[in-house]
Length: 98
Image 1 (cartoon, rainbow, N blue to C red):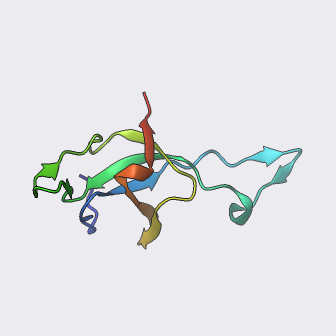
Image 2 (image 1 turned 45 degrees about the horizontal axis):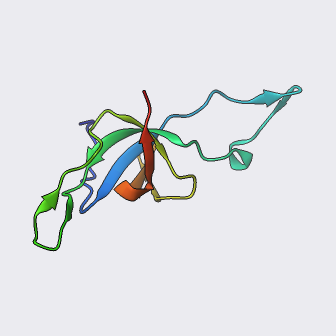
């Protein structure tokens, strides 16, 4: 796990977005405020796990280090120092890349 001071709880997963290269279209640089949030991210930390009706913890389908696709509008963005992370529920993860 990266040296991040956030430990997700429940079925939440902490991810770091993989920034796309700066887009230049027709010589115009698109500002950050106009760019779409990237959907590809790296799993940084896993929560404590979701529990079933009997109290048994359900294992995560992703692991730390996985590259994943997350839903475009899912999660909550957090900033630690200069890095931006997103806390998403495991349900907001659409799939594992590669």
